[in-house]
Image 1 (tube, rainbow, N blue to C red):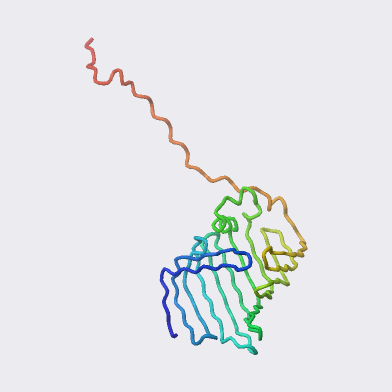
Image 2 (image 1 turned 120 degrees about the vertical axis):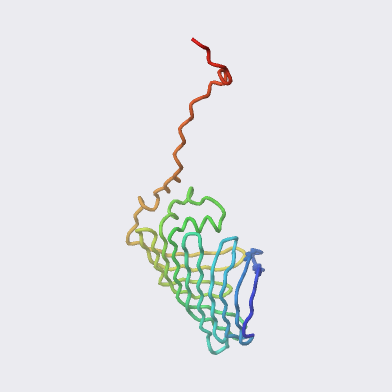
Amino acid sequence: LDRLVVQEGVIVYRDSRSGHIERADAIAAQLSVESASGPFWAQGTAMPRGVPARFTLSVGGLGIETPAPIALSLEFDPGQARLDFNGTLAASKDNREELSGKLHAEAGDLIKLTNAFLGGAASDQLPILVNRFILDGTIQGSDSNLSIADLSLTMGESKAAGSVDVAFGKTMNVNARVAADRVDLDALLKPPAPPQTAPAKPAEAPVDVSKKGQTPKAD
């Protein structure tokens, strides 16, 4: 398939274990697929959870003995956020896919991105999210687990490093080991500035309606 154009597409993902459902609407994309095992290329826009996003994905030919190169780029308008992944996708003999590679994520205003996805005012409970966010790490994962090693995390002026292991199932288990060289709590926990409002217009002088329409008296 040399070129396929999708307009107003919808993707629904349902986790058979947990029953969780995710949905992406308003998909407008161009795709190219050489065969059922790749290479595969796609570029376009979508609305996951109603959030405007742009994406580019390329996957090489997938084989049991030869991992396929994969590159993914996501951009979200709220919060000026971006996620980039470059790595490989390998298929095992028991038809399970394993993903590995380098991950980079950043957001100029993480609170706007969080509020867009969660649909709430997270800044009231988590002022830490107001800060600029940068994450780098090495990923290895499958349909049952995910690990992030060589984790580097920057939140405002605070920096930390460590690793994260996640096990998927009916209940998701997360094991995180993070050490921080510097933590600026004053900056992280500072509440967001209140929105600016336009100055109130001065009140107009009241009109004496009792004299309206009366003829001036002569001296």
